[in-house]
Each structure stands twice: as C-alpha cells, then as structure tokens.
Length: 290
Image (cartoon, rainbow, N blue to C red):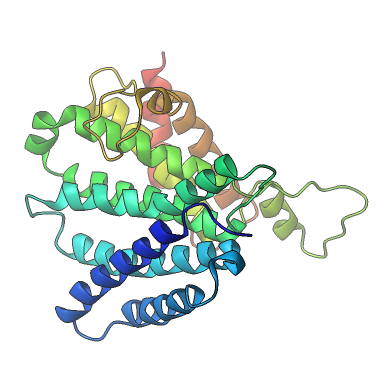
C-alpha cells in the first residue's frame, strides 16, 4: 500500500537522523542513542524499495521506536538539569510534539486513503502516551518547587498539568481491562484482580499516582482548578481539540488515587507500595469538594 506522503515521511527520517547526529556528537556512548541509530538505518532501508511497495506499518513501528529512544536520551538530560535552563520549557514542548508525530501520521493515512484502518501497535501507543504524560509530570513536579515560577506562569503550569493528565489517562485506557468470567481461569487471584482493574504493569500504577498528584497541583496552585484553553501550554493544537481535553481535576484526582490505594492495599498489599501520600492528597481533594 503506497502512502500519500512518502517523500515527506522520508524527510522526517532525515530530520530525525540529523537530530540524532547532533545529540551523539556531544554525548558519551549511550545505549538509547545506539538503539536509535540501528532503527534509523532500518528506516533508511525501507525507502530503498519502490514507493508502491512502501510498508506503512513497518515505517510507523520503526519511526515510533526511533523517536522513543532519541527523546528518552533528551528527557533524561532535562531531568538531570532540573529544567533550569531558560529554554527548558520550549524543549519540553518540542519533545511532546515529536512524541505526538506517529499518531498524526496514522491520522493522515486514514484520512487520505479510503478504507484504510492503519493503527499503531498497542504497546507503542501506550508508551507514547506514557512518555508524554510522565515528561509533563516530571516538569511540573520540578518547577512546582519554585513558587515564584508558578506565580509568573500559572496558565502555562495549568495547561501542562491538563495535557499531562490527558496523556496518562489515555495511556491507562489503551488496553481494555480483563473481563473475568467462567471462561477465564486464574491460579493467582491477585493477578486476575490487577488485570481486571486495568493494571498491566508497575507503569500503570505509577500513572494513577501521577494523575492524582497533577490534579492536586492544579487545584492547589491554580486559582480555580479548571482547565485552560489558552495556547501557552505544552502542546499547540486547534482550539476545538484543546476543548476536548478539559480535565475535571477534582473527579479524576479522586478516581485515580482511590484506585491506586485500592490496588496497593489489595492485590499488591505487602509488596512495598506506599499509599501515605495518596491518602493525604485524597483527604485534601475531598475536603476541597465540600
């Protein structure tokens, strides 16, 4: 199946290669950059074939993986620097935009090719959402310790919280929870309980806690706790799409933290997951709703 944008897609790979070269030139040997280099070489090989035989699914898989590896290196550098440089927020925006590109390409194909139903693999889509949500969480967590920054950039902070919670919720909803019935048998009831709650890994549990914390920050630091439609945040989108992301921070915070506590004290009880902070935030959220 031929893509309507093969030349532009090839250009995307070239730009990603240039980004990789710039990063690799100023860094010691890094595992993720090495992985990205191997993936970029495979992407280049895809374009050696005739356009008519262009494999869209392979491209999307490889392109997504290259982006995940390259941005992981860049994210770690930002976190290590505590987002202190003046351009840190702009770099966060750029990374969020790059991590969103695979989904945009899927939408492009499905809009321009009649009958097309191209999708990203579940684990890739889940990871793309997690990485965007976790990056915004780390940014908000770090700058949240600088009260003067929040006072001067309240709308930006609020928008980053909104976008972060949006992606974490999307990540949590990528896979459907397991439906337990008489046709499904588990020797380990705790595992069955986790899967039925949509908890497939530690990352899913962290996403619940991150969501709850970000909702708490929105209600604590932002005047009304309501989502903003301004374009001062971490993603540049048309206004109508931004409206789709309005987050009811109070409800989402309570729902995610209650599930977190339930799972940690239920099927994961005694395995080291601390619920003290989650309970403190829940107390704040419930008192704030009175």
